[in-house]
Image (cartoon, rainbow, N blue to C red; front, side):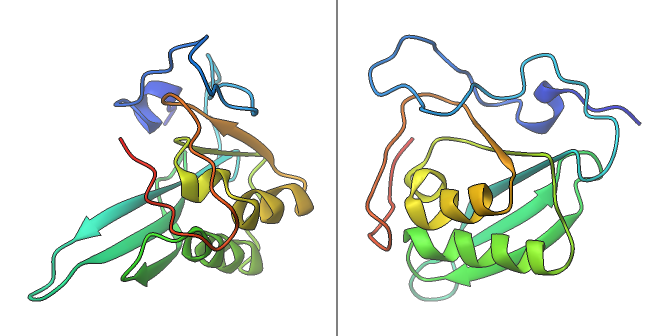
Amino acid sequence: MRAGPSDFVPWLGYRPGRSGASPYPYGLGNLDITQPDQVGGADITHLRPHRGVAYRVAARDGFTRRVWAWELSNTRDATFGGAALKQALASGRRPAIFHADPGAQWTSEAFTEVLTDAGIAIRLDGGAVQSTPSGSNGCGGR
C-alpha cells in the first residue's frame, strides 16, 4: 500500500506567502509514504458528550493510519497534544517526519520541543500559524 500526501491530509490547502506563514517547511510535498514510522501526524476531534465538550487528540502513523496514542481533555490547551506525542514516543514510535496542520496546539513550544528533542522533522501546512505560549489555551482556529 502506498499513500501520498493527499491521502494523509486531503482537506488541507497550503497557500504560500500568507501573513504568518509557518516557520517549518511546508507539508509533505510529493513525498510517497511507503512504510510505517516514516511520517506521523496528529489531529484533534471535537466530541459532544451528554454534557459539556471534550476533545480527543490522536497521534498516528501516516502509512498504516494506526493510532499510536491518544488523550482526552475538556480544553484545547497546548499541553494535551504533547502528552499524546510523549506516549507515542515512549512506546517506541520515532517517525522521521511529524505532519500536522498549523494550529496552536502543534506550534506551541510544549509540542514542538518534544519533536525537536527527539530529532523528528516538523512539517506543517494548511495556512497561517497561530502560535500560543506553552500551556495557554490553544483554540487556534479554522
